[in-house]
Each structure stands twice: as structure tokens, then as C-alpha cells.
Image 1 (cartoon, helix red, strand yellow):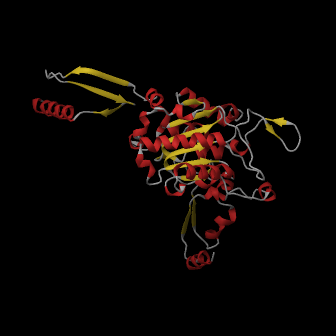
Image 2 (cartoon, helix red, strand yellow):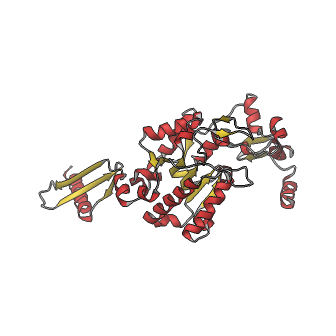
Image 3 (cartoon, one colour):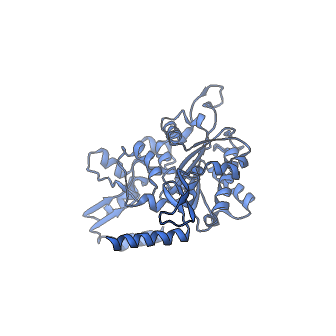
Length: 364
């Protein structure tokens, strides 16, 4: 606090222009600091489709304290410039949030698909976007807590992470994976399960955090544990009256943040039958199903990640085999085209291709 005050004193009276980022995450008084220094221009940068500032007091919320200056000015009719080109996500990740939260206006940066393709995309269960429907999952509340946990989802997430790092060991270094959940107790359970399963402190190799805590970050892979699983029924208060709902998981801004943290793969783990009561979530599940990336999972989870099961999920869209070289050579070679990209090529074939290419240029 003292350092912040000193910085403010140093710039007092000297600001011509100010740029405030993540403005939609700030309450208005936080944005008023640069304005108090008689700025001539202030640029507010933020995303109103993502989470606002965290305000604990219900009284403050009801009086609009959580509304950012960005949103207030936008509602008042001030012109807003939308930056439409995104440079983070694989196009298959971008597709759903663009349609649901940004009026289908987002565009991809140049060569973004090729720059966000990864080796694990050869398996349809490893992205770019997948939904794992956990049949046996059940939400519960730990004693003395108002938060929710889902033990079955924790078990599946650990299996999922273990198979990923077994197949692609580089994921164990560089903190390339985020495991995200809306609930603090689920985050704690995931962190404890991670340490017990792998014998290493999770913060060294993976980022386990709440949706609110991960806003503004990005990772190569994001695993999202939804937690809520109640077959559409939630006990209300102390009575026996029941109703349908998934709590603040239904907040479309929270959903938007959770599924836009990843560059190459978003792997959502949840209960499709519970989430269907949400207008936004049912669209996401239907989108996954339409794109053949919805996986119904039952115990034992190890069978889902068996070698035989993974082999059946290899995304081989085109295979050409036993092709004789056009130059009359007797050696046959095989091309495997996975996901539309050449994945294997022998050095002999590469050399021969280069020779043909050079010969074609000389002949022309």
C-alpha cells in the first residue's frame, strides 16, 4: 500500500494520458485514481463479457458497486471499440464463445490454427475442445462448508492428466497445464489428490485454480471441472422443496472465462444431465456432441485411457498406403494424414520429393 501511494505521488499532476487494463474487473473507485490527477485522456481496456470485480457485500452489489466504469460508460452510450482479432486460441476453441458471448464477431489471427496445433490433437479426446460426461459424478458439500466438491470428477481429472503427461512428457515442465474449477473446495481437493497421486507439489508443474483466480492467464491446456452433478435437483435451504439449478456455474461470464484460458486444448469435465438446465451450458454440450467431441465416461476410468481405447480415438481422417513411387522405384511408402496434416514422412520420401520438385523447376 505504501509503495502504491508513493507511485501515485510521483505521477501526480504529470499525467497527460492513462491506460487502465482489465478495467471491467475493477470497481469504479479503483479507476478514478488516474482521473484524480487531471488526466486529459483515459483509455479503458476491458472485457464486459468476462468476470466483474469481486464484491462480497450484498448491499454494495444491490447498489451497483460491482459495475465497472467501463460498463457504466458503455451503458450511457459512450462509443466502444471492439478488438475482434484474437491471437490465443485454436479456432475450434474460439468458435463457441464467439457465437455465444461476442455475437459471432471474433476473428483468428494469421496462421493461428497451425500455430496452436499440438501433437496431442491426433487423439480426438485431447482437444482442441472436448466434453467428458461423467455418469457417476455426484456433488457434495464438505462438512462445515458452503462450497461444493465432486470426488468422481477429481479422480477422472487425475487420470486425464496422467495419461497426457505419460504420452507427452514435456507437459510436466514449464507449467503448461491449468486445472480449473468454479469452487474453492474442489480446487483444494484437486491439489491434494494431485500431490498424493504424483508425489509432487502441484504448483511446480500445474496451475490449479478457481475460475476467478485464472482470469487473465493462459495455458496450452485447460482442464475444467464443473463439479455440479445433481440430476437437476438441488435442495433449497432447510426445507424439502427442490428445484433445478447449478448455482453460479450458470453465470455465462464465468463459463466464458473458464473455457477461454487455453491455447490448444480445452477439456471440460462435468455432468451433461445436470448442466442441461442452463441455457448456456446446454448449448456447449450440444456443440461438443455435434462436433464429435462429447465423450460419455464410466468407471473404471483407466479403461477409457487404455491403449486400445486411445487407438480407436486417433483422428486419422485420411490414410494412403502401399503407394508405388511414380518415378518407377520399387520401394513402397506410406503416408499417414492425421487431422489433415502430414504426420509421418520418411527421409527417403522427403529427399525424393525434393528431387522431383527441383526437376520440375528446371524443366519449366
